[in-house]
Length: 444
Image (cartoon, rainbow, N blue to C red; front, side):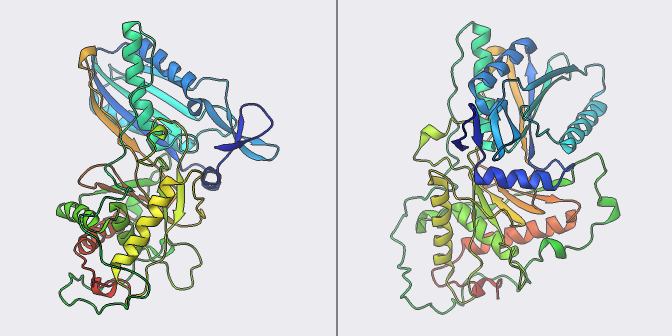
């Protein structure tokens, strides 16, 4: 958020936030950009102290009180004077299978209803008592005002504030999340990469390069096979689902390649996704956008900020089949690192029908044994508007999650795409300086 208006406490939306707002208004009743954080706790919990800790965080961070309303010169985010909604329910009398289904149905229904754009805080928190010592925290918020990195900061600070209040101390901000394993930060090359100047002639394809069987570019969202009737989502639920992907040995190969050539792992995964999501001929829309947290590794002061700092950058199209792969991956690395380090962000077009989310912080699981409490689960559930979206999660194994709209793509389509993506990532990780796009068997 930037460029304050004359009205005190009101700020204009950033270009990226304005794009998200347009998508939210375009698809009402689908829960677009209403994200969930689910935390499981076991042990002795004092619910009233936890509620007070949440109120303390709301006073500390404006984003937890922010809402969206129409302003004289356009939509604006403003600092709400109200408190985010905090509710507590006791479901100990409900059997576990029924309780889990009930919670899932409630969260899906509330997400489908969306969050009101009337200026009230875009944050709702539900504390469920599941047993004598079992608890679930369900935090629902809008991506318009809180991004995933901020969610990790809030979770960390919530438990530190809870600990301070129990001890009668003044709450202080907790340690900010670490930058995620160089996913979008360049590594120092293990050796000097080969020259990739524009004047260097393109080498001939390497016959020994790892090749994939020829495959047609994956169709655009409008060309997906019809969704089977038994997979159509119920009316009360949001139409999104996810497929998790384990890259296996390819993850280590990708990191070795990036260390050797001074690239970022996210560039390799973006390249594989672009090869699969190439738009059809004559389609004027961008193929894909990269959504990044804009919290560069060299600026730790931005790590503890809570709000919407994300930015988007349109990715270049898949190059000609004769072009070597490494210069293209280097170009992708440059675009990603420049966007993350930009002071003001790089506004995306907002018209791409797929996106890759990278560089987001992992939800913390703090050690609470001194409080006789343990975090048993920490789950973040995002709902972008895209028919297909790829989420690069933190971790040395480069975990990947593919989210898809069940009204536009079937699960079999998503699983087939995930399998093809795994093969392409492995092929890219084994590329040599002489490997071209044609050498992978995808593109031309």
